[in-house]
Length: 155
Image (cartoon, rainbow, N blue to C red):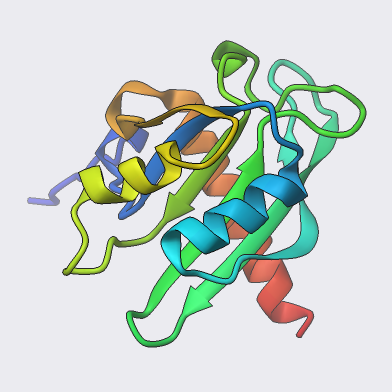
């Protein structure tokens, strides 16, 4: 007898921590302060292409990346609004940025990580987002994976 297996997108697990940030800072200023607060070195990379919700249009958003060699952790900062004032995730308009990493260092707790971001001047809120409750964030993570593959391919 042949066994059938079914995959559902909700069963696919991402090993990411996503912190939503509300801030009045421009992306490059927030990047500078995040680097200082978390002792990392995010730098601007090619804008991330994201498929617009409800259309076939591709929009581009500011994207920052850092790979921490000592802890083998990737860090990403992505703006939720681009320079043309278009929203990446209209259902999360209250958030200006997403700070994403693929693992918090063992010496750091998630609360320490978010507390460090909250101490940044002009950051009004920083809070972890539960990936199991947001389909749009899972789409962003898919777009992030594709963008990283493209960046690595063009090196």
